[in-house]
Image (cartoon, rainbow over all chains, first blue to last red):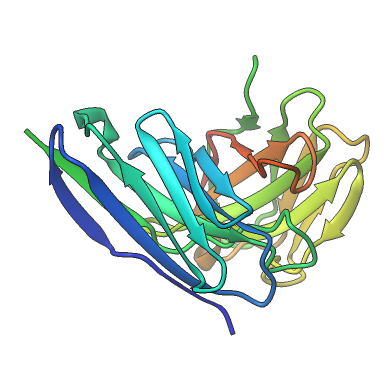
Length: 112
Length: 116
């Protein structure tokens, strides 16, 4: 079967660091994507890890361990605008690497 | 425009009516996806096109749902004999190719469908 787990809500202080963990179980796996979605907006791509290790893009970093079926998104120097929902999305549950499986996401609230 | 566009942005219909939702992907994007997103949930995969070919329709809930992309660009998602449970945000996304090195999908603003 398929499963996807990430915390439902996280609250952090402006300027701090927060880590959002994701564990997954899918029938096929090509890599792990992360998307951000502000209330009322469309999901936007943050990162994709096809290989084990850490990928860094500015204030955001994403990590993948394929052997542990685990990944995380690290957000540094939090800003108020980072308040949003964050989705980890394993790729490959279907016939190809294109198919993303989204869970319920993690709602991040950044407070002053 | 540079992004994915969808129309209409809002659609209210009566139960039993057919609706057609349109998606205009980013120019040059080979792959097109349809998702459905309920409030408080992530997008749920419906179907995937590579150019004009519908490669995967495993996420379509039942045979009232269909999609086409006849010329490999604009796509239409059609829901026949709508039911109240079909009410949701329907999102389209496109990517340069299926999967690829970054697997980045660009999402449109969505069509909010309400079935009365």
